[in-house]
Image (cartoon, rainbow, N blue to C red; front, side, top):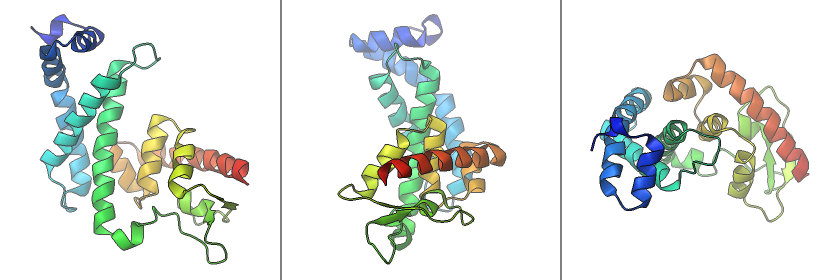
Length: 205
């Protein structure tokens, strides 16, 4: 059985019918993509304690998740969905490693509580923009993580990746290297994220 004889969607359907050899074919097909993404991201975090094989392993987990959860009826190609899942797994590993390395600085996910009200969270902390005046909201019973989840619902896949890295202390140049994007593209994404976050916060007021 050669993967070149089958479309990705056909292979996913075969896996759903318990043809596990189809899964191995997809693993073979997407191995070069996983290795390529792992190598690019490794260049930005090789001194953090992450090994290249750790990133590759996370990539295969992301691929497996993509195979198990892909919905062909959504307007997303299997390749795009796979790449997003792989990148998310690798980014999660990079972020978790940085959290462990800087636990004290990152234990609140960069959403620093204000002195006046322990439930206030500033917009500045979400986007890391020192030029923006802080806009505070009352979280009531919502946790910070719930607010982050709500914000992510308004972001594209790319913006979500940028947002996840940004709130965990990476600057836009580091994010550009991790995602293999032009720094200007990251800066533009951060501006879009800032606008979307502001709208979410206004609703929360």
